[in-house]
Image (tube, rainbow, N blue to C red; front, side, top):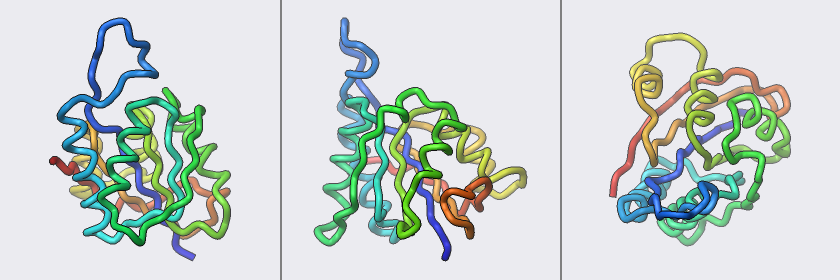
Length: 168
């Protein structure tokens, strides 16, 4: 069975004074861009079965706003996982390898540099347009869509099918 992994970097956050990094909310641009990411997922038929989201406020808000734009029929299971906050690509991969076999599409909502590093690590070398764009810059609200033909516990490489930067 083909597995699909969608990596979403959280939308643009605010920098309120005296607020710990984990608790920073989305800024105005982030509140506009997160629903655009959800619309992009819906329009490109990348509806997740499972969402794995960092516990940081800005990632949770990104998911909630994106979910509102997915459409009424999209009701994925959502897991908020503290291991995704400030995680390396390796740590993110370890979390993804725990995905149940019945899940076809996972959406991971996380942070850079881990999200970008994971996309590049899984996609390996090559010079596709999507890979070159993801390697150059992985801005807030960016989405990388990867496909793998192995069970989640064996995930070690994938094909980068698409890279998008939806804006609201």
